[in-house]
Image (cartoon, rainbow, N blue to C red; front, side, top):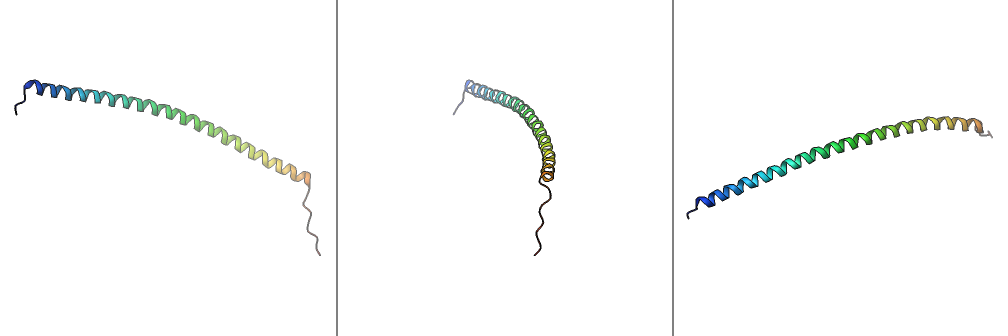
Length: 85
């Protein structure tokens, strides 16, 4: 089977075109991945800051709760003791 030089040239050109298109797609995917990673990192940092603020608030509420328990205990007075028989 004899293949003409035109056919060989066309096959090489199509192969080069496919490689260039796939290279462009790979480059775009890499760029999009970097952008998405940057956005996700920023979002994760924002969530971390919010959780830190919530942890601080919970710690303050726990401290105030201890004070409230002490105040209620003072209002109620000492617990009655069991009577001995």
